[in-house]
Image (cartoon, rainbow, N blue to C red; front, top):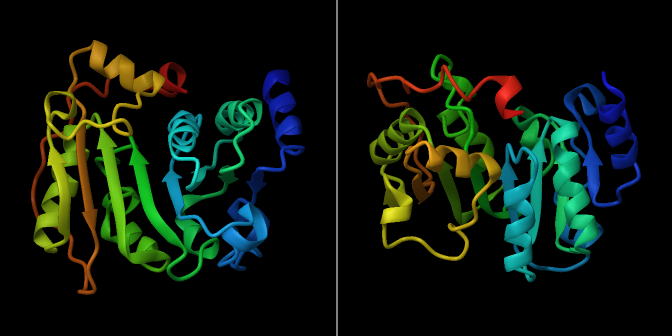
Length: 247
């Protein structure tokens, strides 16, 4: 590990708004803040919104800036990435931002029933070969259901036609309530101050002529089903999606 990464990790250990609890640290135990984020961490009763797979935390920070009466928590396992957003939040003195370094697979261990108002999934890996690893698969939706409020919203913003098509088919199959849906966000009438937030890599996709897709929906109380369909793979993953280029 490079000296720069080590320095970032050491600095993050001192950030009071950063919580680091990967699976190898907490195993199968519930985290002590589960059900207590508002009272024990933010010390208010404002809505709680998660960004899962937040990367460098750009979206989390901008959401927090635009919505000071909402508590935002960016979640990712990569500490070196999280450092950037955490540092920005600190420099901007944002009291409504937290970052959680952990595995999204164990996210129910961190949040209690009805604790979360919204979930943002911004440009997740489409996982074209592994359904169960997709952040909008029924595997993950069941996890979200355990802590998302009944009227809670899940937002997906993606450059991937595969991810968007899969999620749209799953949402329709399960008769989830669709709040918004577009295959070309920046040419739609859905665009608002929140959806206009662009990450560094989103700007790259747009510059390459790749449209941004968006869908927002609410879960229901019926058993979830996976769509049985074949979806054409994205044809541009061979460039610009390598770990070296993106991360």
